[in-house]
Amino acid sequence: LQGWSSQALRGQTMAVDYVTYQGIKFPPAYNSERSLCFAHKEFQVQDDDVFNVTYPKSGTVWMIEILSLIRSGGDPAWNRTVLNSTRVPWFTTRLGLESALSYPRPRLLTCHLPIHLFPTSFIGSRAKVVYTLRNPKDVLVSYFYFSKMCSSYEDPKSFEQFLGDFLSGDVPHGSWFDHVRGWMEMKGKENFFFITYEELQQDLRGSIQRLCQFLEQELDDGAINSVVENASFRAMKENKMCNSTLLPRDIMDQDKGTFLRKGICGDWKNHFTVAQSEAFDRIYQDRMAGLPEAFPWEAP
Ligand code: A3P
Image (cartoon, rainbow, N blue to C red; front, top):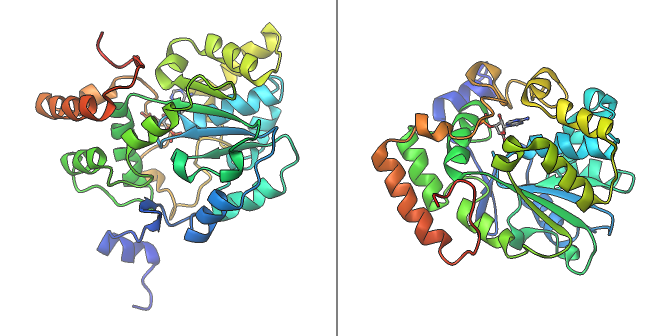
């Protein structure tokens, strides 16, 4: 096998050896069972921590930009000079944990954890959680393209196959339905803030103002304008500190896609057949039954 790059080998086999923690699979490049277990059982949450929590492809990196711009009072210098993963570390990963542990308080932290794997030391703390969710059909489309370009995700054989895996929860980070249902149980608690990708799209300024209130961080109009401007899709695409282009090719292959891909609502309509959409809706209705919420993507 000498002379073969690991990428070539991966290209041949297409198999990804996921890390599994408590029945959920995680991408192997950054996670280990140990790092996930540490995050879950040993990580010490501080009362002034702010957590950015999402299911993948729901606007994680967008919220990272917003939270760090708010933290710096609208000044874009931090966002433009420091990598997003340093500004808001992924504390569940091996490298992210190091950043999180050396991060001066108050910390901004991020993860895709389902609620039952979230740090147990959060219970009883006054730390805050910002949970962003998105139309699962758009999540699925975004996840499909992301999996193609990211080596620690299995390259989907087809859209149809990925749709089936997504609906059955057999994708990295587990089931969207379980993730959202689990976190939604916290709705109404004072240290939780729920927002949708669709609300961010529709009214970014108003969303940022609500976030500032939640974070108890007052920003004047000029500072809010700067957050809006610097967290726009266009500004983020140009910013190497958040557009993922600095990631090594064997982690994310920019020839196979773009991380900040389309940044729109409703791209699922360009991908789902009518039959696929109807099958999705049936499972959605079944899995989301009993939730009092009316999400922006649900028909009235
Ligand atoms: P698309 O693939 O649909 O374009 P995550 O950060 O959770 O992985 O989510 C990535 C998705 O959020 C991508 O969706 C990306 O384009 C979108 N996104 C990131 N920043 C955005 C912004 N400022 N405005 C709109 N969409 C954004």
